[in-house]
Image (cartoon, rainbow over all chains, first blue to last red; front, side):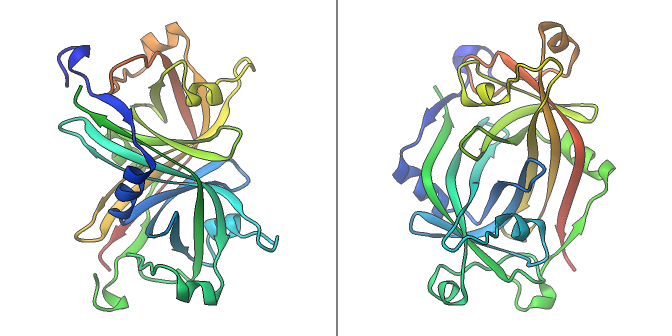
Amino acid sequence: MAANSSDQPVLEELDRDECMRLLEGGVIGRVAFDDGEGPTVIPVNYAVDGDAVVFRTSSSGRMNRSLLTSVVGGEVRAAFQVDRFDETDHLGWSVLLRGGTHHLTEQERAETAQVRPWPGGDRDEWFRLSAHEVSGRRLRRP
Amino acid sequence: MAANSSDQPVLEELDRDECMRLLEGGVIGRVAFDDGEGPTVIPVNYAVDGDAVVFRTSSSGRMNRSLLTSVVGGEVRAAFQVDRFDETDHLGWSVLLRGGTHHLTEQERAETAQVRPWPGGDRDEWFRLSAHEVSGRRLRRP
């Protein structure tokens, strides 16, 4: 722990290129959405596809029910977050994508970045979260 | 990566005691809330206080504006998530608290678990997120 406030790490904003670079280096992120009972967060494996992330979930799960929409071409608002922190140095970074999720068709799945979830079992529903907004912060030495 | 599906890790549900034990071992979690433009996620340092987590934010920030409510005794719906994953073994766990956030008075701050944020600067607004629901999952070897 820093001995006094002048030694404490400071937060700096990251530009979009740096955010996308950090995002591309990760394999687990967190999807935040509203399931009708408020905000919730679920960790997922992901792949980056342009300015979007692709992830999979089970057809019987809460995330699938919440992110599916009956509107053709419609999106459900969601956020996608990745971070990495060092608990010894108290340094790290976080990146946040905000946008809408789109359920992928069979055709779209074949053409997008491939995601291989760590857990076994059904993960047959694929979603893409397109970033309307990308932001990130780094906690660094002053 | 597992050679075939039978070697893949499996997800198991954690009971509340195990979730709280894991939560108490952490120092960084993620607050999810709706800021009026959809779900968003912000990492914070935290402390556990009974079935609640306590965290701090700056008075000028988005989180403070979103979590404050003019309703006396009112709460704003939010979620709090912690996790830890091993990218080599593809194992890990995640814990999720869902509930409402309450802005702490000076008196309440003095009496609650103390939080010391890693970043320097103003973090003078304290919030408690009381868990209406606690859940967690572990990704383990089959």
